[in-house]
Amino acid sequence: MTRVSDEDIRAYREDGAICLRGVFEPYWRDLAARGIEYNLKRENWGRRARYYDAGSDNPGFFQDACNWQFVPEYREYVFDSPAAEIAARLTASSQVNIFFDNVMIKAPGNQAPTPWHHDVPYWPVEGDTVCSLWMPLDPITTENTLRFVKGSHRWGKRFMPSDFGDKGEAGKAYELPRPDFEHIPDFDARADEFEFLMWEMEPGDAIAFDGYVVHGAPGNPLPTPRRAMITRFAGDGCTYAGDKHEELGPPFPDCPIPSGAPLTCELFPVVWPPEARAEGV
Ligand SMILES: O=C(O)CCC(=O)C(=O)O
Image 1 (cartoon, protein in one colour):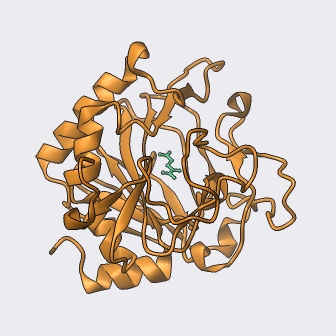
Image 2 (tube, rainbow, N blue to C red):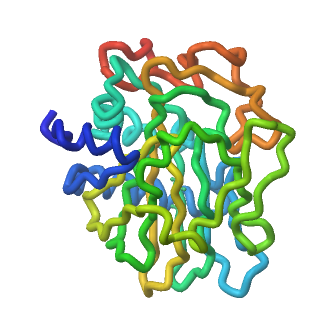
């Protein structure tokens, strides 16, 4: 495995996000692009598909999730692309489970920002080895790239999830009955207090980031779409947390394992190393 250097591992742990250059060959990009093209058709939406800004003048912030069982291209990408091994290496895990696949697509000129947030508070999982790989299929500039608050995964904080849509005003926090969740700071207003990470990217590059690092993104002012194939992995020590709160995104109503259990089950199979996969998956 030459895709991840020791320096990448150090920076990932220290900063919470890194950009890996040229790690996805054209085969994987074409595969993901075909999966997205299929998934975007109305008849192929999963049950979690949503346009966040459906009521706005220029709708076009689409997301769908948890479709690897239904979209063969996503399944192959999840199981056989370099993504899982990269996540294993960065999190120093002996094996990783797929938690879920996700696509986030902003149409040309779409104004909807991605609100500042960190991921694990949304999701029915707990653990320090949750790692996402965000692989864009289009060139990314500073105008539409993700932004990360450097080192925020090490603050030990849990910020209340924000509704990405909220009737067009992205970013309104859910009111969750959890005293350990704080309102997220307005990082734009307090930009001089923090250090941010962001990268221009070419297809083939990917950002790997920790489940607790705070991030957000502007809309997509470019004349090209901003398609991102995202895979979420959970490494050693992660457990299911379906009882975290009621507004889980995504929810897994059919999950066969109880809260507190290790993740491995048919929804979250082991994907790496290949020899640890369950038979028939
Ligand atoms: O693609 C985006 O705009 C947001 C991505 C994101 O928040 C995530 O992958 O966790």
